[in-house]
Image 1 (tube, rainbow, N blue to C red):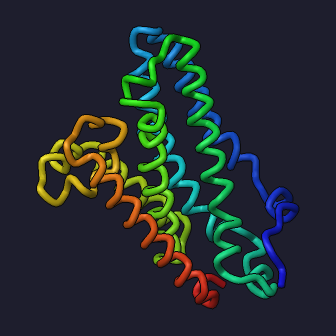
Image 2 (image 1 turned 90 degrees about the vertical axis):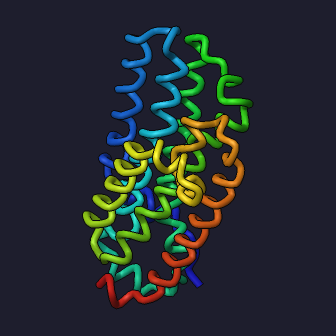
Image 3 (image 1 turned 180 degrees about the vertical axis):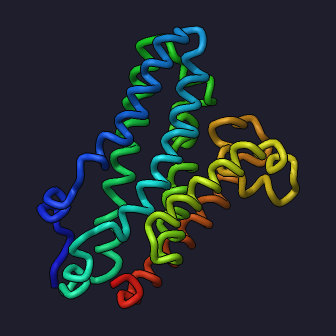
Length: 220
């Protein structure tokens, strides 16, 4: 049984999978330098809490199906779960590295992670929305059987949730599905319930991705 192939991953990786998220990181570094230490918390929160999840959702939509040798990969004796992990793990790993790198940059400018609540709360500020949008972007791409559709739907969800986050936070049920509560409303009374709910929803999305990816004939 063939397993995870790091060599194949490196050979098929395109430069845009690196420079696209790196460009956003560099842009926010410039923004952080221009705004200075007085606003480094806002700059950090905006990058790790909003930009990182958006890029993760878009890249996940392309990662699952954007492979010129996808039909050949399906012909190989590789199960759906490892193959899906092979595509999504690098997307998450890159965004996680950039989120941590920006926090390190912020610390150089005087960022206090205690403003998030604790070090762990600072990590949940990017982890929860990133995993949620990564799961949604990949699921949308598989449901539509098109990478562009998945990326657009991930972007639309990002816009709606970000613009209407006040409405979601005040709604009795919507507060549990607000993707951006962790980075922007870390004092909300429903914060922990929100994080748990989004974790369960993300797990469900990944499970659906796995079930869809088994039906390989849809994507050939």
